[in-house]
Length: 545
Ligand SMILES: Nc1ncnc2c1ncn2[C@@H]1O[C@H](COP(=O)(O)OP(=O)(O)OP(=O)(O)O)[C@@H](O)[C@H]1O
Ligand SMILES: [Mg+2]
Image (cartoon, rainbow, N blue to C red):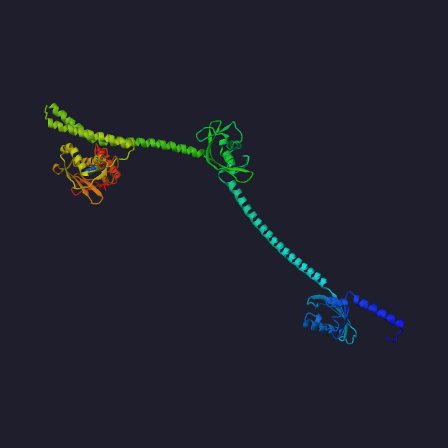
């Protein structure tokens, strides 16, 4: 420079000043380094790293790296690269004076390409903002990707749900189809007439069974569709049935099931067809009611016939009952009436023969009264029992007393038939619950049968034993044993059958009446032959508890 003429010197000075100005005002940080020590840097470089003017001069560039490791790594990579290339560029993180790190772009150029480690010029640009925007962009991108992923997943799930719903709908449709088909077949083949109306009560569907049993006019009448001159509707009792009383009209109006209404359709020739109708509302909008119609004309006719038959039967059985009652009356009254007559005849004879012994008269008339009273009691009893269907009246009774009374009753027969009745009555018998009049009839019938059975027996052997026994527990047994002809095996099977008799003037009712009385008292009446060649009749009755 000393060799320069002053003008040249000034020019060089100006140029240097101009270069220094450019160097200092460059918008990038520039620094020159000698073996990684800063020899010179511009103001922008110092500002970039947060240092004051001249503060970085002669400083090792290590202080600008965030770590020794970064310093070594970048130095190693950069310088080895410069061995083969003339320029090394990278983007890196550097450290400011206050410890802050920031992103910058570094361009490194060696001054001597043959020895790139010695002197280099480095240009630094702060790219933090760009990096931040890049990071923001990347984050936005990642967020977008995440959103897309989420949306895709949601879409996928929605697709799956849609597919499942379609599957379900298909299945439901199939089920619906099957059920509709089932309903159709059922509706068409159901043996009961069915009609369906809309919500205005107009018939919209009828099944085959209804078509079979009813004409259009009949259906219109049954459903109340206008007045038909040829037909009218009637109640079960024959009274006219109004439109409002029709089951379908009621069911639609009141929204309830109207079941089993019997109504008749009367034709102009007075014939009536009967129907049982049930109407139920359908709980679906636009629908009305479902109505079933069953023709019951035949059933009603059969019922009427049945009732008629029943009435006839009742009549016949009443007649039978009357007949039975008459037969019983005849049977039971026979003995007391003939006894009464006998006593009265006796009195008459004595009067005619002027044989007047007051005591005998007194006794005979008392006996006649007794038998007449017995007859009256029987009539009263039977009337009560048969006419009013009353249960027999059970009272605690001493069976021995009844037997003794009946033996006394048969005083006349004993004398007439020369029979001796021998009562052998158990002492201390408990009372029994019975209708005394009925039990007396039983005893009387059995004693009479015994007397009658011994008509052929030798007089000395005409003994009729009446015995009472108690099993100390529940049953009292009465047995009546005669010494008559006994009962053959064949007869034994029949003697309790009403109207079976081997006697000329017998009715064959005595034993049947006895058995029914004893069984009505909860006891049993049996017959058999005994060791004396005669028959023994036994009946049991429960003792009073
Ligand atoms: N003690 C007896 N011994 C033998 N046979 C008897 C005896 N009691 C009844 N029978 C037979 O049983 C039959 C039916 O007796 P039941 O008392 O029912 O009728 P009935 O004596 O023939 O006539 P009635 O109706 O007048 O009594 C008798 O006809 C007789 O053949
Ligand atoms: Mg008899």
